[in-house]
Image (tube, rainbow, N blue to C red; front, side):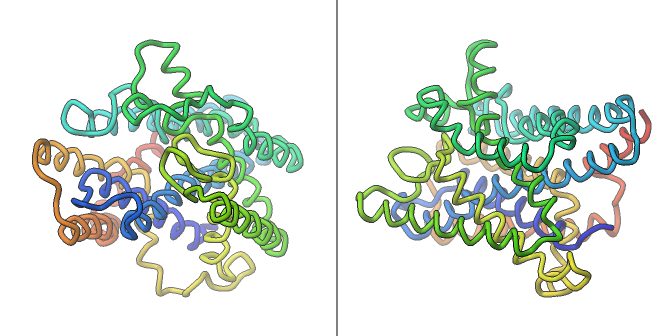
Length: 358
């Protein structure tokens, strides 16, 4: 049974991704990291990728569990995984080429990214699916402290273009493993979080207890920030929460916010009732079912914008804000139109076709 709130969560995750990427390509003039607009944009950005990866882990784990419990053999699992991994890796390459640094973009063509991470998650999903919940909780805890274990290997002093570049196989492997944009250590944390939330989907009290303790931990990070006079959250630099590289407090806080968002949007659906806000949020669901397609397609738009904006002055706050909001929201009606008129043309459909043909 397809759950409405899962499609809504996927839609919100990909729309947050669109928002933060658009804001990065058309940043408003005169807005510093301390500006309220920058804080709002960063808040959405900080939630986007964790939510995107967690819900992907939720889905891949559920699919793997159903196939294993249904008696699918190794060959069948391979036929399910291989097309997904292939499409995700090709899409990562497409994204890198669409928003390449040589045309004003943000990526090198060979950069590992979030889709590479999801491909790794797909490869690992059959193994993760046979682990007990306690084993996965242990893995979650290990990955949550992995920023401390990795230490200087994460290279917090690296700038963006260093983090997305590599001069050879060794550096590329390092970007994939621990010092790229979405490295395996610690980002598999969110894949494992998705599997645990999947297991606990019929146990609201357990999830709510976890959210409660997570909110306490979040409050502690805020208190430390105030007492020590350190910035609470920055994309990178000296702060309690950092995204590049992902710090341990960032994993805990963002994981809590992801679990909270999923619990709110779920409403009563898991127990046979209606999702949060009933049918009034149903307009989001087509975008959720097209999340991968939207993710790749929006980079085509941003690639054109980045090329046009090369050497041009930044937009003022209001025009930049308008461009960001319009480009984010427009994918909602486009996804509705897509499902109505061309439902068979999408990356999601391509994956399903390849899986059935193998």
